[in-house]
Each structure stands twice: as C-alpha cells, then as structure tokens.
Amino acid sequence: MSSKEIQHVYRSLYRHGLRAIQFSKPARYTLRDRLRLAFRKGDPAELNMRKIENTLEFLHYATIQNGLEHKILKNLLMIWRNQEKGGYKGMKRQNYSRDEIEIKVTTFDTLNHNIHMLNETMGMCLPAMTVRDPN
Image (cartoon, rainbow, N blue to C red):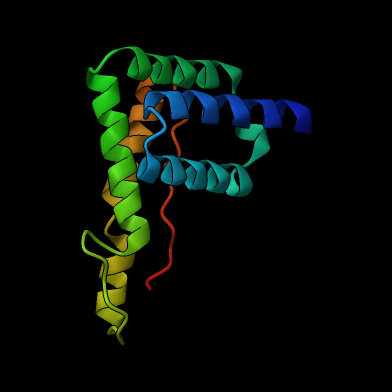
C-alpha cells in the first residue's frame, strides 16, 4: 500500500470511530491515541482491505444501533483509557518491585489475546497491543 492509501485508511477508521462513539470527549482521545499507535508501530504490509472493510462495517453498526458492537467498542475504549492512566483510579508513582512491574506489564495480555481472536474470527483489524510502560 502506498502512503496515500494508508493515510486514507487511517482517516476513514478515525472518522467512523468518532461517529460510533458520538464524539464523546474521553473516548475520542483514547481512540485517536490507539489508532496512532497502531499505525506507527504496525507493519504496513499487514494491512488487508477486506479486514479494513469489516472493521468499518463493525464501526458503522456501532454507530447506527446501541447493540453489541457499540458495547464492545465502548468497553474497549474504557479499558484502554484506564490502561493509559495506570488503573481505574490512577496509580501513584512509587518504586515498584520487579514482581509488581511484571504484573502491571502483563495485566492486559489476556485482553489483547481476546481482541486478537475477535479480529481473527470476524476478519477485523482492531488494535490489540499493550503499551509496555510500567509507570
């Protein structure tokens, strides 16, 4: 894919995502940051137009009805936002032991595996990656 096509895919995913979350403030920034991270760290050779079309269709259904797709997207954005903040209430910075850092880093691996399996089953390309920053 050329850089123009990748830019077009990014913008259409972002636009459809914003419509699906109805431009709500905390969710729009989380969506933007996740898409940026996925497009910056992802491999452009892995982009598949069929997966992108399925993801856009998923976001379209999340937009038009308050069904399963909308709830999945809403919960993913809430979890990703809490992950970026360091937990539900926000963790205070302190010196963590090696075991605590390992737990904090691997907490979201199961979620990312489930997102990966959802992508594989439905043929979508939702971002499934963990930011490996223990602080």
